[in-house]
Image 1 (tube, helix red, strand yellow):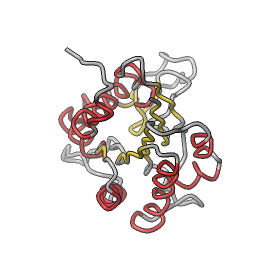
Image 2 (cartoon, one colour):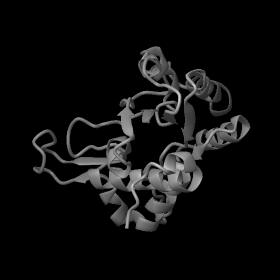
Image 3 (cartoon, helix red, strand yellow):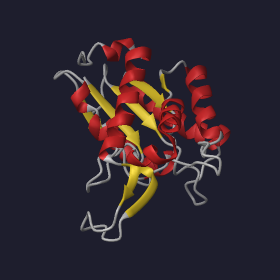
Length: 222
């Protein structure tokens, strides 16, 4: 069984430390009979991923019994040619992935976009994705597609960590540690290796609780 991932930089296999995506952490949670094929790519939206034929690359090999995890939203918000509106073009674009997977007799799984680290002056975490997460939930219900609510789960985790400790999930790196980043990094969108692992654990927990057929292939963790 192969689990394919279509998504953006928060899920991709990041090439350079200290950046990491939750998708690159997934393989270790599954038994040897499962392969993770991570096609997520930085900067991609629902539309640009298709336009660059990245979905076509998945469709070349995806087959009956496989899964397609789909998580977008961060880049669909951007004011450029790849912008999508939550309840119209974003929803329509996500349907392309659902239909494509179904034609291959694979199972599509929708994932709500993961939270960014944004706290207000009172130390309260606030949502930057607005209706995008709502649209994914509505589409999953309407299409009877499994849903992994990473938006909800990641928001709860980041809020519980609080303003300071949540920096460990993201990239708050002092100057002089990484040669590629001599001035340090302050990035509240992308994950550290620790943060990517924490997000992957949330995805796995959602699979265990919501998708029993996939959960059968998970390693039993003590």
